[in-house]
Image 1 (tube, rainbow, N blue to C red):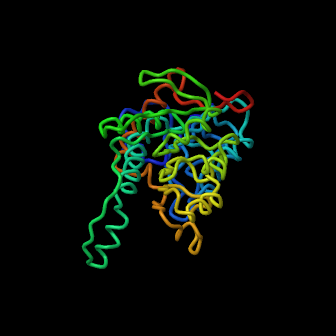
Image 2 (tube, helix red, strand yellow):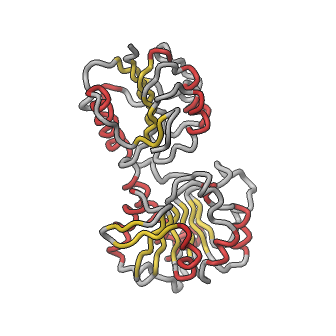
Length: 320
């Protein structure tokens, strides 16, 4: 029976790991060519390295003939999903729900406030040693639309409330009711977009959400609205966004882009009214403690034969 567990965090640094499995450290290495720590055929649980190229993350998958669990340390699984077909049937693919909510929600608020209050302009003025005040919109009294109301979307709303926003509308794949209010289905976006002062994207990337934010979506946003993307770059049609920004009618703050990394000379860099951060929603000091707790919990569940958390799909079966 396979008993090896491949971890991208050194096992001695994770409190509460259960006894039984053999824990092996593998994070792909600096150049992505680190030797495997053991025979891939003996790996029962593969924890995908964090902040590595897709080719590094997926390199072992085709050789994990007896793997039972693949655990990502990201909320999205889109970079691993294309290689899942190489896995044997019955493998549970789990994401890192609960790990990135705090960091990503913080960044969503940071980008929103920085854009509304004109912080990028202040930075440029400081570099020129130039003092020039101006009038900027506040987040207070703005209506916010959150597109993608999972755990990260809910965490964003938790942080919006103290800022005295006028209201929050929530959109997800299907309608439901939460303690904070109704969640609208995606089909209602055309009616909700013209009312929103700030639109925050926190939806997973899937076939249904790829280029969800297209020219029509952007055209429905109200004049002066702000688009914030902490989801995935391909949720937005970049060409359509650049064209809309060029009109000066809306502004944007994006932590993710398509393509990514955004190459030098790309028109999005110089588009008016855009603030770009380099996909830093997850990697903060809040990440590692939460990742370690998730791994300890998952591996205890695994060794006890209990249901795992965050199972997104099982190979050879249906999506969770």
